[in-house]
Length: 377
View 1: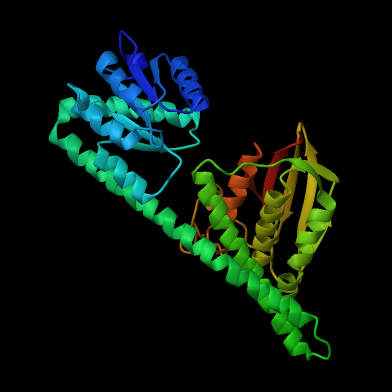
View 2: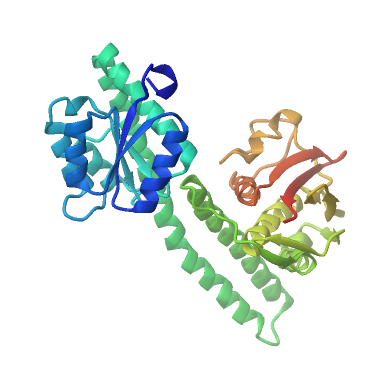
């Protein structure tokens, strides 16, 4: 029962005290053929429900005087109010807010900032679920309960990830700092120097993993945004290669750089960490006494970064799956020795997409070539 399936457009009530949010929702939904009614606060929203009998309600949580939870309870008490799907809009993506929304009588939960495409999909889903409620009765109640349980588990997982990331970042930074201080000591045996270099290498790998987790979480919430500026690509690649030199030396692998372009317009931090993940991944899978080659080339309206190793390569059937979270090739492809934590390449894909770019795998014959294409402007 969306706007394209009815003779008259469905009416969507948008209740939000922020004008910009109301305008965005109105324009997005009217472009899809819906009739939109606006309310600037909870009391006005309750009055609009009584007057307009909307087919779906988008309801902000934090509003002065009457908040979204109180407004929802009042809406449910109106004649016909129990049948209207109510989708809460909130900047607080956590289990407590989700549970409060359910207790108040909400049907769905959408996190701000709201992406227009997701808003349309959620409204369409709410309208379809309203029809299912009428047609399926008890089955609808069971389906909604299962969906709510899955959403709660997802929010709990995100909260745990957030705690882990923030609790680990400071100790790892401290490990690296103390290792740097030890490196400044004179008259240190070579074995101690090698051990300290190994500690720094492992600390940097762990920090990269932690930041990957953090950015993957941001991307899930639509908050991973590339902050573009002019970047000295040559210096950036050489810095990353220098940071990974210890790990490469331990594996008897050389990192060679050959760039066809000196500057790019990009988010320096995201590109730095993307290159760190890709080069470290290549080093890990390169055979001893071989090179990992970092090169660039100019494409129409874009630049390509290419990281090549001479390892066993990636089977063609796995070349898209390796960018999914927690996918590791060991156990999935017996012909491959590639393994990892399953997050580095996921972050690389998200970082490329944040720039409006793409990432893919090519056959290196031998080995694999990880390719990133970024817009030039």
